[in-house]
Length: 197
Length: 197
Image (cartoon, rainbow over all chains, first blue to last red; front, side, top):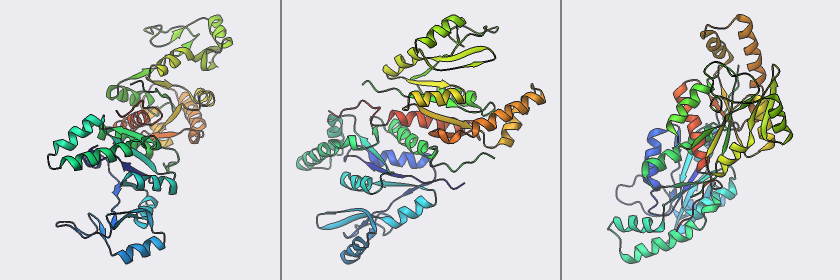
């Protein structure tokens, strides 16, 4: 069997719980490949090249842009961030599912470029709950929290452009739903290499 | 919330294990409504009207056909069998998912009539395994078995007309896949009545 892999693009506002939900899904579903982003920013302490990011120079990043080697990319605070195309394509061809956990603008870029990508929006149950979660961390200033909430509202306004919505009201239930989305895509006729003999 | 229900049409050859797989799925997913077929054949011992079938006269059945009250119907051995449309529509409108476990020809009729229906084919891993399962019951004559195998081959030739394929190699895994298909449809943007406030 050589099934076709699916590209899953997972997006959602800060505080929606993408990371926690994804962590649970990885533990209950095999054959998932996590895309590692490339960036031109400096590695932080404990960050490992090729694991947390592919760290590279501005020159190298722009060379890859010129050669169309990014599935999506953007600039934040003077640094580039992007998804290298080649490893994604290689894993898909090998029949693996690929997960991109990226920002909204990147997700919409991927959707344009690869319409078959499956876009999933992880949503908080309400803005009130989102605010509670952001405050609950207790590590941010009021300004940072208000800024995150404003960005979250902008991001959530694009929810309808996603194929699937996973409301993260409760982590286990949300992980169950995200896992179901991934598992079901493997059962799509067009993805399943199955002949009855 | 008033989510939209999905109509799932489950088909597969005799011996593929539809019943066993569905039984497991019902135990792990709430909000599923099983459509009860109508028939003009006589009830067997222990069959309860409205539970196993809606038993009705030829005249009544043909009146319902004339009034377009069947989602699909067919004749076998001089008796009618069909899926009453009204309860299906009512449950879908209430946001329930509806399951039809029906024969191939009925499934293809439903697909024509309701293109949004989600067709799932439960397939045996191989014809060899299917034969083994049919023989394993030990209750059928060779003629019956050969007849079932011939019908199974005809049915499986239509597998590509189904959106999803669930290969029943192992009941738990197959039930997990079918449940995933059902749960994922609830997360489709168009089915989920969710507004972030």
